[in-house]
Image (cartoon, rainbow, N blue to C red; front, side, top):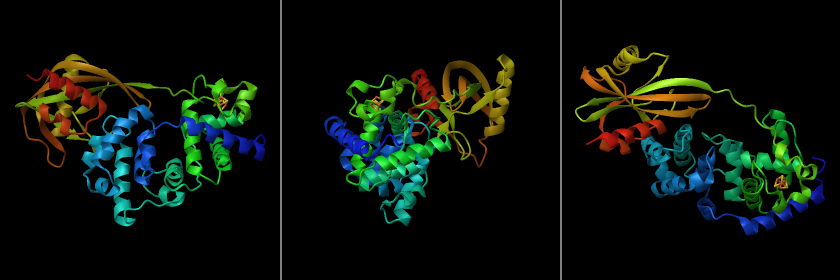
Length: 362
Ligand code: SF4
């Protein structure tokens, strides 16, 4: 930190803003400057790249152009517009926040960090982004791009994800923030982190901050930030079943405490090494228990592999024919034609299986 005296800070700000004036990308949420659009884009950009977010953002804003329209929508429709972005708790929180802003705050977003942080799904970074980008008030930000950039600028070689590391980075983010145009400055910091100070092979030769960067001076940019410890992945096998009755398939809506809460899915169960007749019997009994109907497991149709948090999942997809019984009361179960699948928000693998079934339909 001591390496950044006021002359060095001035140089950093000057060089960065001059670079940004020439290199800022034209992104749809930057054109509006409205807190609603900035909030939606920032939540979408968590865990997702800019290129992937742009089409989702544009479609979402066409359907929900204001916070009032979003608040008035059913959660299921919001989830349907989020489908494919993953981390669905973000979409449910967006919907909850839209309702709080509309009913309790008169449709206006607060312009200070502490009030914003009280809203569902808004943390310190998102609050700082809304306050600085939309209201042009000074609020520091640290997210993945700025974390990397600041570690290198400071030559910080401890773990930046610990509480101590976070303090160092947030302090630095606050210290470098100018009083004039803090929103533009924060956007410039993020843009440089994503476009120049990239995770692998940062483009130091064309970086406007190389004259103030400690990592560049020490030649340590490839080693910083210190990498996360690798997470150990656990292998899991699951089975999902397309139970068929009179041209329709059985879907259920995932409950509040389940993975992908609020989305629809084909019945899905964890399996523990069973195969053949033993697996079919187990699935038939689980279907009976969870839905109330009896069915006969048929062929394995397809298999997908996917990851969820620390699990590496092998998903075996089966067909089954309905035999008898009525759907349990009090559960969200529906018989749905394959042509109607597109109206239901599904998990990513649920959607892949649905497309497979659509292609099988005559
Ligand atoms: Fe990142 Fe290199 Fe620029 Fe330093 S000089 S901020 S390491 S791109």
